[in-house]
Image: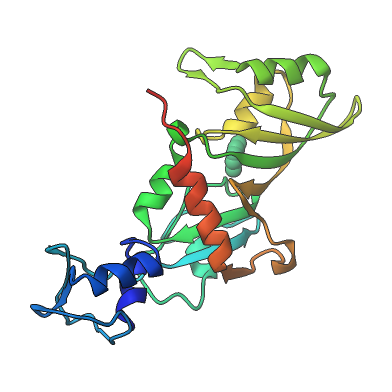
Length: 243
Ligand code: URA
């Protein structure tokens, strides 16, 4: 792999920043400063950037269209897991970024990037998650307002304000798009339960700027594009932290 790609993948800067750093002699390979950013390096080379060693971990990022009936876990003796669906994975350390219930469908990110996962899931970083929900009764404007204010589920869980777009509302069945900024256990189902409604179908449509690619079909997956990954990193790293 080229030295500049190696350093860029490990978050040392943009390709042009790295070229400049190499030109200035800030990068050494096996103890010697290099002058060209396009020299080839391998994982046995010792690479120092400003005197600090940079080691390579290949990161993988997949978008999975999770079907119902599959567990959001890495491994399970009895039931199929989302990782069983990622058939061309190169690494064994992949995990689902967050959990969807067994009966929930839709967007699930699969990766081995722990830092990005943590930031996408932490309520501190306010990364949005949008769900399509079908429920067994009438969604009202009053419920929309309650969700927008931050509904109290129980003594232990006060949900952050959530935005609800009512798509269809009937006495027997309603549909809505709900945007939440955290991911507590059964969160969407519990939010609707607290206003007396049962979720009968749930699908995640997006996480931050990452949109479910419907063309994948249920059970389909693909690696994220560079653009998707860059936008997702921006979602996770650029949001203001709560103090
Ligand atoms: N909220 C839920 O209730 N279930 C999910 O799978 C995801 C969010």
